[in-house]
Length: 480
Image (cartoon, rainbow, N blue to C red; front, side, top):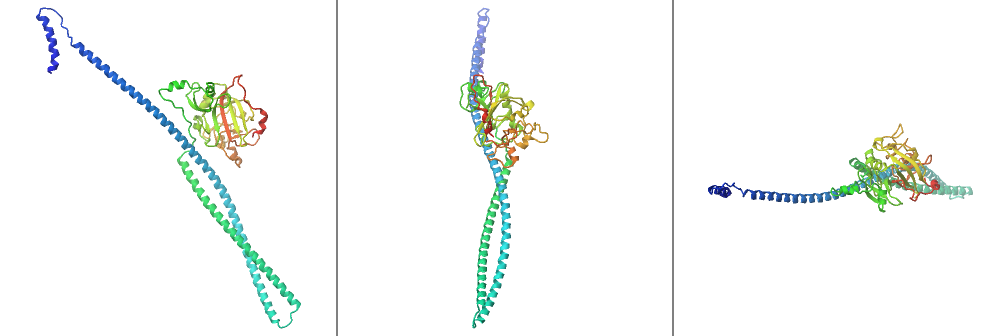
C-alpha cells in the first residue's frame, strides 16, 4: 500500500506547488504515459509468443498429417494383399470342389467294379465247389478201379482194362490241372479285390478330407465376403494438395504429351472431376488410360453395381477402373475405345471403336462406332445398351438377368455375344453353361472361346499426323 501511494502523493505535490507560488499553471500528470507504454509492449510480447506457439502447432499438425497419410497407404496395401489372398483361397476352394466331384464319380465306378468282382468271385467259388465234387467223385471211382485192379492183379489184365485205366488217369490229371488253374485265378481275383478295397478306402479318406476342407473354406466365406479389393485411392497432403491437383494431367495421353514414357500407375484429373489413380499404357505412340484388364483370374469380376461404379481390383494385375471414372474420360466426345484380346494359343488381336458413355442418370449407356482392327465385331449389337450387374438388371432379355446368368457386369443386350467381365477359366470348361459364364468374344454363330488376356483402354482420337499402328484385317480368321 505504501508503494502504491507514492505516485499519488507526487502528483498532488506537483499540483500544489504552482498554487503556492501564485501561478495559474495547469497540472500535468506525467507518470500516466509510461504506464500506458509498458502495458502496450507487454501485449505485443504476448502476441509474439502466441504466434510462435501457433507456428509450432501448425508444424506438428503437418508432420502428423504426413505420417497419417503414410500409415493409411500402408493399411490400404495390406488390405489389398489380404483381399487378394482371400480371393486365391476361394479359387482354391472351387478347384477342390471340382476335384471332389471327380472323386465321387471315380468312387461310384470303383464300387460298381467291386460289385462286379464280387459276383465273379461267387461264380468262381461255385465252379470250384462243383469241380471239387467232381474230383471227389472221380477219386472214388479211381479207388474202386484200384480195388478192382488189386483183385485182378493175380490174373492177366486185358488190353481194354489197361486202356480204361490210362484214360481215367489222364482225366484225373487234367481235372487236377484245371482245379489248380482255377485256384490260381481265385487267388488273383481275391488279391485284386483287396487292392480295390484299399483304393476305395484311400479315396473315401481323401473325399472326407476334401469335404472337411470345403466346409472350412465355406465357413470362412460366411465370415469374410468375396468382394474384390478396392482400387488405390488418390491421396494428397493439405499443404500441397491444391497445387498438385491443378497440375495433374487430364488423362494418360496428356501425360504422354508431357514426356512420360513409362507405363504404370499415375494420378490423373479429367476436366471437372475429382482426381483418381489410373494405369497408363505407354507402349505405343500415345498414352492410353486402361479401364479394364484380365491377366490371371486373381480378381473376382462377379460384383455388384456399387463395385462396378466405383472400380475394384489391383492395378498391377486384374482391375476395373469404375464407371464413374470411365464416364469422366469419355465426356470430351472424341474418345477411342481400344480392345486387345489374346487367346490360349498366344494369338493377340485388337479392335477400335469411336466411343461415348452416358452418365449415371442413364445407367452408363454405351455408344460405339466401329473404326478399325483385325477382330470380328460383335460389339455393334451392344451399342446403345445400359450397363447391367447381378443386382441391377438393365438388359433387353425379358425372362432372365444376363449378368446373373453369365456372371460379371457388362453392356448386355439380350445376353448377346460378348462379355469381357465373365469368369476367368484357366482350362476350357466341359459344360456349355460353364463356357457361357466365361470371358467371351463370340463373332456371330461361331463357338465362344475363353480368353487368356483382355485389356480395354481409352485415348483421344489421333491427329492426322499421327502414324497408324493397326494390323491388316486379313488375319481375322486366325483368331477365335
